[in-house]
Length: 354
Ligand SMILES: Nc1ncnc2c1ncn2[C@@H]1O[C@H](COP(=O)(O)OP(=O)(O)OP(=O)(O)O)[C@@H](O)[C@H]1O
Ligand SMILES: [Mg+2]
Picture (cartoon, rainbow, N blue to C red):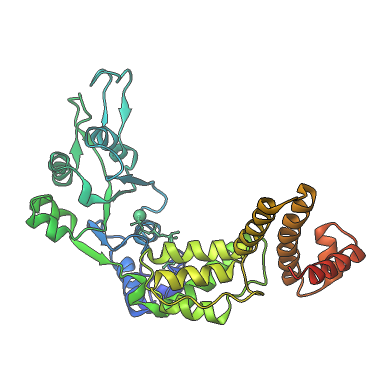
């Protein structure tokens, strides 16, 4: 896929599928270069890395950068499907191959012809199936379950695992001959904590994507939280970061997330200020107060609903005012109330000291 006249370094910036892999760290640049080097070779690739580092993203980029890009990309999760089902999923079956096989069904290998088969969690493939897979790799052909006919396929095999396959070899859980066939090209995607310089770029990337999706354009992470994000270990890697950005864009619960990250990092929690409290604390506080009133004497349900809705309304109004950068007329418009009604509500919150 390397363009004539271009260098590998130019190309990693110019080729669209590689732009989906966000990151400027040396390890990510190297991975992008490797993708371009192997994309048209059909050499089997194994992608290694912890959960959420972007193994599937790399596999899809390999496919997209190759001459097979117009062909299928079929993913099979070897860990999620029990052994015998996995065999029929991969190789298909003929009618009558087993009870319930009332019609023939092609497997993923046939369907991926001319494209890529992505064997996810390859380390979890049962040994019996590993033997059959080895055979396909050697001969490029196989039979469906219950079938005699040899089916020839032209498939590029890309696998991924979060195991150390070498350890699995030693423990006898993975066949050595298959390992050498699959592992011709090894791509290791390092955990996010080992390439922290990519964190700001990823935050920017996800902010743009989810900002567009949820129609929010003035989203910014407070400095304190950003610094926690830069130092956090991200056990769930890029997926965990992506999920936090998604959640923050929708809920804007910066204080909650800050506390969560501090707790997960084993840091002491700062005392919660009255103003910065999240809606959970406010509601919890209110419930405790109302229950204690209920235990002592009379409590008006009407009054309770008014107080609960005030807490929620205040949060909504705050959020909308942030969106309109403090413009109350615009906020009233979004909230479907009059400007006067909004001013009244704001005054009410002040009086109630909510
Ligand atoms: N470098 C990156 N740039 C942009 N998005 C990324 C990057 N790495 C991962 N992602 C995103 O993070 C999420 C997880 O990535 P992916 O599914 O590829 O991880 P994985 O290594 O296959 O995880 P698992 O082992 O849990 O299957 C996806 O939404 C993916 O798009
Ligand atoms: Mg995956």
